[in-house]
Length: 85
Image (tube, rainbow, N blue to C red):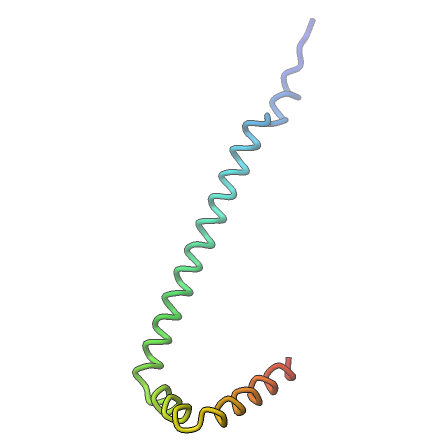
């Protein structure tokens, strides 16, 4: 009686498939985490640069002086940007 072991070697077991799936998920999570950390760092840098410039203080002053006008201008800008998409 000859037992063919080549078929059983080709098909991974449930435990092996679960381990491979968990490994793949772990790698994916690690990649997403690294990309998120890079994006947060870029955002921090951008916000720090914007706050050190003149644009933010000018906008703050304009909003404090005319809040309703600033709200209307922001609404129009948002409407224009959404229509272009």
